[in-house]
Length: 78
Image 1 (cartoon, helix red, strand yellow):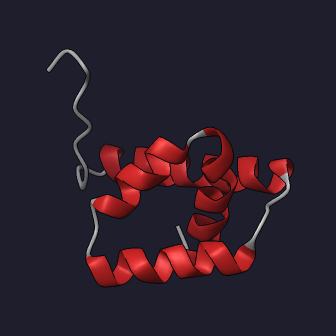
Image 2: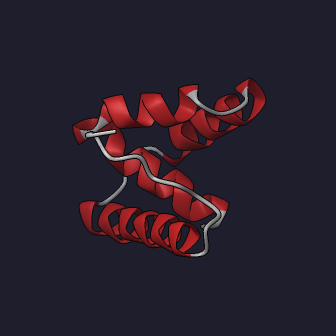
């Protein structure tokens, strides 16, 4: 997804899914993580509808990468 969509999704997830946002930011380069955190802060509060649209776009992007073999999702059972 594009950067604006990712920032919107992460900003919207901060309230109800902060642990997920922290996990995502902790598992990327420090420079990119800091840049995204700053953009999230600058964006501020996101309307729930906008956040849902952005989060759905991120999920669709993940599913597309998985179907193309670019990403492997590991189930909890593994």
